[in-house]
Image (cartoon, rainbow, N blue to C red; front, side, top):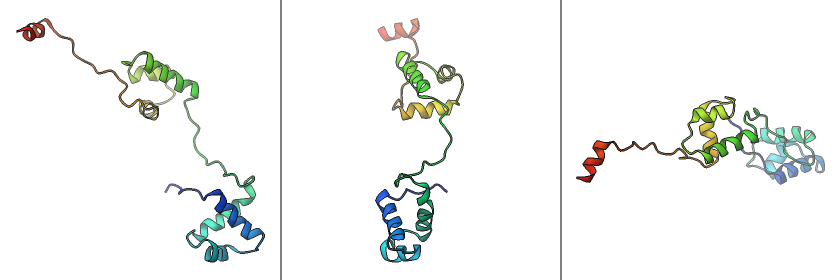
Length: 133
């Protein structure tokens, strides 16, 4: 299950302040000051207080990005220079560091949802004659 939104820094600081200065416990803080915040969240906030520097949020863990900013710029430039470029060519542009779906996701993040030029069939001589008639 994904994590919910973080507590606002001022709420987090207020909880820690009540613990330090007023010597309130977690149950008392929850009962009188913040009844809408779960008790487990208050316990966790008080435990994590020592790890925080000046109330700044601790960075959440996660996998690092496979594509660097330079790679993203190269993909964007390649699309701008050649709108009919294929995803396979874009993968070659970034040395196959990611899969094709990641390229699709990257283009959506950049706002390039329909960046590929439509493939229009060329007119054959038969079609041209039919159009003229």
